[in-house]
Image 1 (cartoon, helix red, strand yellow):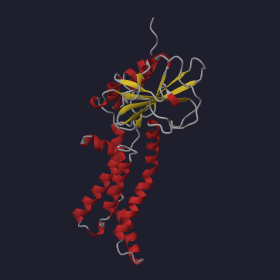
Image 2 (cartoon, helix red, strand yellow; image 1 turned 90 degrees about the vertical axis):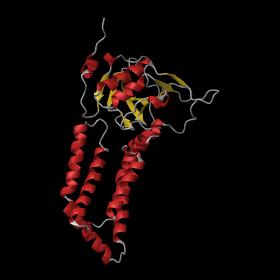
Image 3 (tube, one colour; image 1 turned 60 degrees about the vertical axis):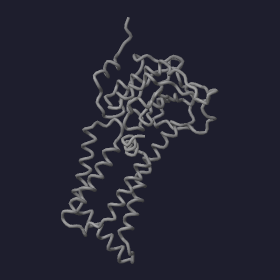
Image 4 (cartoon, helix red, strand yellow; image 1 turned 45 degrees about the horizontal axis):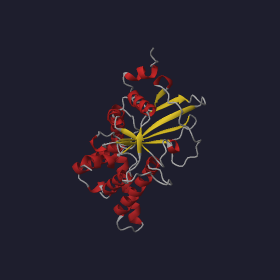
Length: 308
């Protein structure tokens, strides 16, 4: 793993490494007593705290957020920290004096440990959510992947209908990661669980020669476009969602229209949700699940009609 890949992994939202890094950074900053700093050093201290906050916000916005919105959120957060620095430092001084009055010999250490604990607690829901997606990408409790005589996983061609729908989902959004994922799609194949295609309402995707392919950022995400269609056999609406792991195409899931929560492993769902006949793009409705802009092809994909 290269240094750039390592840092992208560390900074990905929901990663435990990211949560630990931010907590440690906050704890280290809290060890410093701003009341003892000179005017210049205090200004640098405040800028450092504001920069840390801005970086946290910039790397923790929902997938699909535009660069402008991401930057605006980061600047607003950093500015708020700078604006409230006097109030925050006054509160810090009061808490430190209270600890000293209670006989605490190292109040800064106590404050630092408390800050680390609070930071980890605040980030825990995001880590749990990302972990659920990861568990879904690597299902547990199964007998495992079928392997051949050479000890290699069993693969099959990705269904043409699934490939077409995935391409439509990627084309529908101007999300920056779509280009990298489209480059992977030609080499995508289905990874079979227990020798069955589409097991557990999931098509597991493997990208051949993944090391040579560009990767999406964020590395772990649900792509912000869903696809829905009416099952021709039952007339019921099905929803398809695309998941990304380690920057690569990882899973295509199917669910009922009524299922608004993200797919999780071991959900009790009706079996056989995959259609007997995959819908054409004209029969598919694409929905952008973020405020990211659509590209110029989006309208054509949404309104395409079979040609004579």
